[in-house]
Length: 93
Image 1: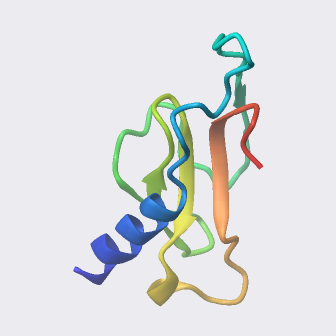
Image 2: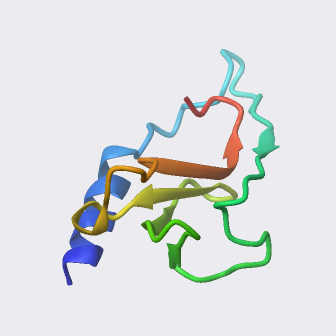
């Protein structure tokens, strides 16, 4: 249950206004950027939760088309990255 609450909290914090990624004319100017790493799941992985090879547990989040994995805080240890970016829009920081 706590996993779901943590994932929901991260998702709410990351919500962007509808105008994000649009220029003044209203045209979308974003591109998807793909990342790769040994700790990321395979590209065809469709699950909500991922345990990386270093035993860090993550929850899938992101805007439509994105895949960003956020650390589940209550399972974290000192070597865990706070987030893993697998695919994100060019405006993601």
